[in-house]
Image (cartoon, rainbow, N blue to C red; front, side, top):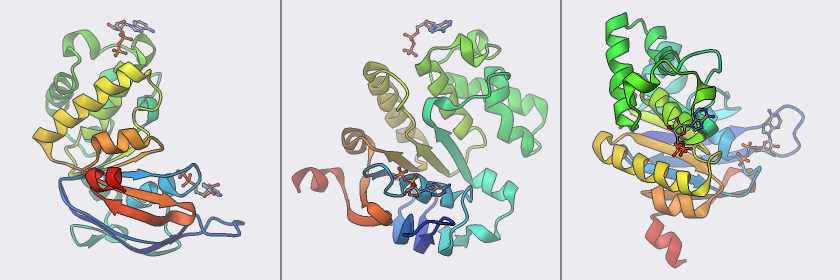
Length: 231
Ligand code: ADP
Ligand code: ADP
């Protein structure tokens, strides 16, 4: 994993009266899962997307292992940061293998390396490669699509993974299973994971630390789950 630092990060959308994120300063330690929790509209997704520059901050600085993300090229960001969102968000016209291979191919990996990586990742997320690599997303259950989404986020072995409501689109039983699997994968890989959820139970279960946000991206609390539970 890599350390992420946000320094007085502000995001003001055009035409908005108040800032979506007013001034967020936060250090996310390397190798930890940090959960962002808070009500709808408090700036969770905006904060997450500023880390991988899907959204450009109005002001402030974001550093990954001390390096300003603004100074990174698109390929450097692809190597550094994986992205996982609700339901997996797979491209429907692409097979499982093609979906997972998107970033490695953009980074110029050769075909045999990509193929080996896809199969290793399918094993990692509990899908038999020979059965699943050539399927299309519509041929998978919601839980399986979400597993493929996690594999895609991990594909180029980035030190940082951003997750936006990763398990929001599946039934409660599957969600619990996916959460357990993520924790067991994380014990091995030790990525820095920033995960957005509106579900405090999910935050307590997955987080090494929890950021509780209120309107305007203000930090109400930043603590371990034990402390959050006791307060
Ligand atoms: P959350 O993820 O916590 O639900 P968001 O980061 O999506 O919150 O949104 C924070 C605030 O910014 C909300 O008030 C939302 O309406 C506003 N917002 C989000 N995206 C845009 C956008 N593209 N244009 C204008 N306002 C936006
Ligand atoms: P998960 O625990 O990942 O949610 P399910 O229990 O929903 O998985 O699915 C069990 C089996 O049913 C899987 O082998 C899956 O391939 C198959 N399956 C589920 N949904 C579909 C679908 N829409 N089309 C084809 N097969 C499916």
